[in-house]
Length: 254
Image (cartoon, rainbow, N blue to C red; front, side, top):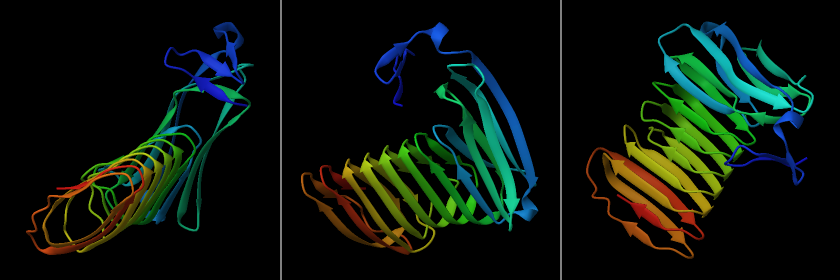
């Protein structure tokens, strides 16, 4: 089944326009789960087309709130919101029972300001945003069709991002990175607090990077159909090693 909701909120399924009365009743969702953070070292999140927002707050709990609306043909579609702890891993997943053709659902996750071993997010068609003083040794994000935005308060040792169709924007600090996009732009801004090693590439998109506090920047740029501009003036304390590649796009470093 191919499901499309166009900009006029018209639902098209397998090439046929579905009228509102045929599309079933929209059901409001507002479900919450929580767990003490002292029991958790890793957070693993798995969703389908549900946007994921993670924010660090002053709390000793990990709290997840699924909120929005879902709709289907029969009106009996149900949300499957799993929230399990196993071997100090918190596993959060959201799926549906039945055929869900409409959703503006999002999951908002509040986590404490503590160092986690890993935060992993896996989505099919959803945006991902991380904000606040999130701290983790490893951050993994995989989305087939969605944008990724990581704000400046986030600090990780290593990040791995894979996006098939979506932009990646990061303002955070990291030590090591592997960022891959098939079709999307990559924008990085960093005020370095340590030496950095990163491998960044996109097949169809531009790469823009703005740096501060690198006394030496070793840059290996490569583009087939685009321009490369390195305008960074070296100053600061740390060393940055960046391998940067795009097939049909420009590379700009400031």
